[in-house]
Image: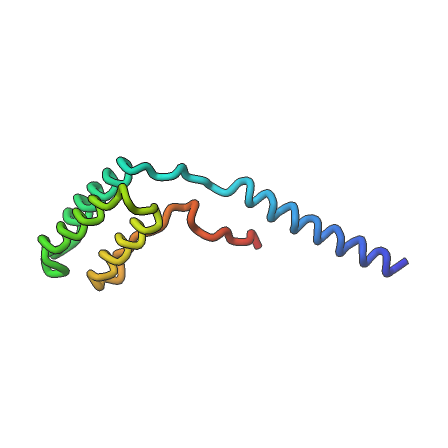
Length: 116
């Protein structure tokens, strides 16, 4: 009798974990794929906000080099996959060697964490 009760409890725990994980997958936020014009608009916005908000921007990098890099990324948007654009943006901002500057991936690209 005790063994059957133990197996019942373990079965209930197992099923509750499975249902919890399944519900997390269904309720996870999704984002539509970025279109090429939206990438261009996002890159323009990133450019304007970064230059306006970053203290002593010109001491981090040459404005011409930064503009050329962004222009290069923007011109290749049509031929690159989304993750390649993201990686190029990450590389550009990593080259500035400032720890508080980062480009985050879209929410849909992030790993799903267990709700424990």
